[in-house]
Length: 251
Image (cartoon, rainbow, N blue to C red; front, side, top):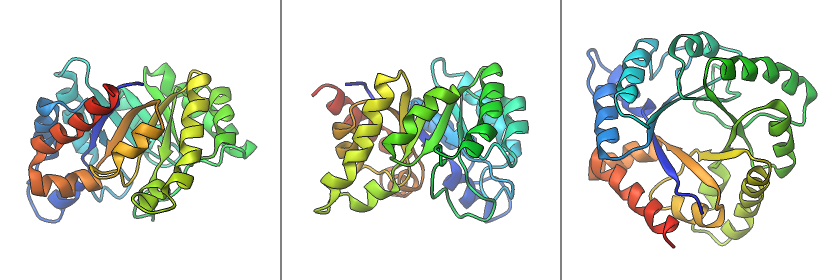
């Protein structure tokens, strides 16, 4: 059983900031609070329209994370839109490639890795990101047959798209829905591929996912984290996630 790490996604903090003039709430300041409270890293997804995280946020966030030895900055995005120039400039610890379109509200599917054309497109950007010193993760649906292609492409990790699990959590169908997630995590582990997870995870549902999928190394949480932080505070929300992760790792 690995001890899962928390990467706090700051997009919704930036979205609130962007609703008015000025820089409050400041994503860098909230990122520092998260790291001081024990978050393993920070995640951002800078979209082309800059509706939340802006290009100008990235260098200060990288400098912040670098001031905490052992912590990581994860930058998500579509490598065929605006992402690669950002990766070349910032060189985050991890890059997560996500196939979102510019008009999507949020990511809603992973790469269809059984499509040879998709793999041909991904291969050079994966190679470039790795040469820049980044760990590369691919956002994927819970399709066990896709995992072999991740190995073939040379990516280091997958990020399991967990919306279907989150919808099913605490319902009578959750046991069936979680099976392909566990299968993907197991196959990835056997192939030497790391496993991340993210999308609609929360304090109430993350525990069951981690107990059933024993190889998840990192979860990236933003929407629920921000909502929970309004109730508990930013630092306390980090502590509550870490408490869950500690209990599961020690079980």
